[in-house]
Image (tube, rainbow, N blue to C red; front, side, top):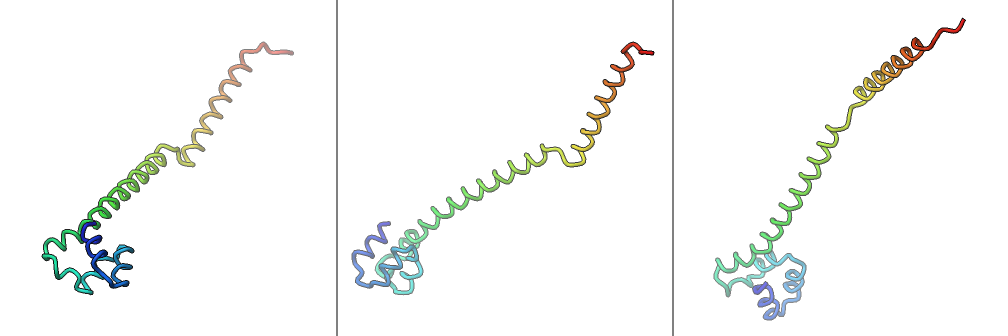
Amino acid sequence: RMLRSLLLSQSDDVEMRAGLASGLGASMLLSTGALRSLSCDRALQELMRPMKVRSGFSDMVRHANAETHNFAASRARALPTVAERLASAEERERHYKGIAARARSALPRVR
């Protein structure tokens, strides 16, 4: 931030200001030679700072995406498949038919 504000305040170059303002500062600064007054290490530290922020943000997004994927996968595993649902429906049908058959056999026969 300090580097950007320093360079923006000292620069009359409209293109450089636009580049800095739009986040394309590193390539613009290197191509225009605006970093010559600063030491190389300091300039690189300043230029790398925004990248670390973006990298942290992308890690956070990647983590959130992985969590979403894991949640969706676990829900998919928890839901029964079509074959399992069909088998359980057939099992339920047999169960209730058995109950109905026992109930019918318990009734007295009418002649």
